[in-house]
Length: 74
Image (cartoon, rainbow, N blue to C red; front, side, top):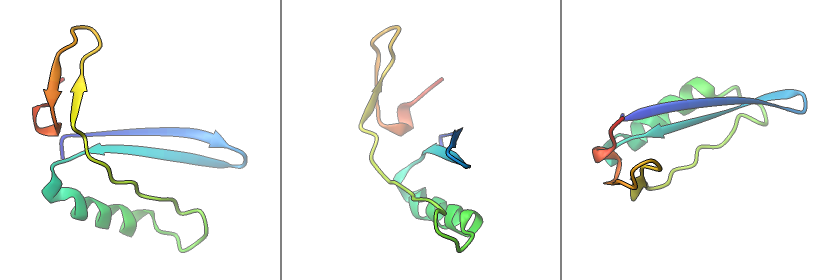
């Protein structure tokens, strides 16, 4: 796992939590399994897990491009 970010906002009566995880492909299914086991309440509204690829990032300040999660640096 490369990076984890969490965001919480109030939406109507519930708090909405958004978690962003940057990971190598081989860890995706393990991460999904952990999230499902620990976030599942069995009630409507447990949430969704979205999986997408990260092709590259562009640093705003310098314009530097990093190819994929494995080259991402802070």
